[in-house]
Length: 68
Image (cartoon, rainbow, N blue to C red; front, side, top):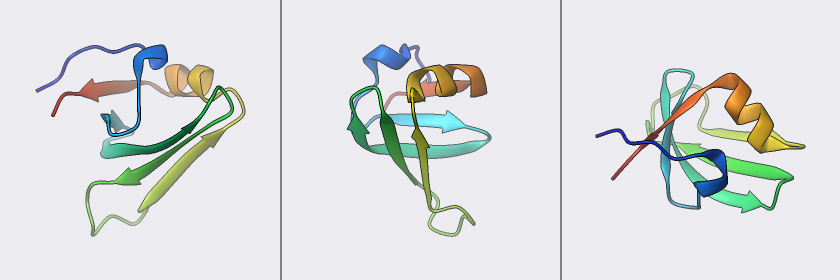
């Protein structure tokens, strides 16, 4: 099930779809960084992070929030 959530509303534990993969947010360091873990244990990229104004980067890349 998908819903909408702005980057300002995202929090640890949220699921987001990003670049065709489903990620769970594991850590948010203010406006500086966001860390995510891939929900697919067989994925090539098991971890992902954005540093330096991650909110703007995430909005530019494009994501969708997925409710649990």
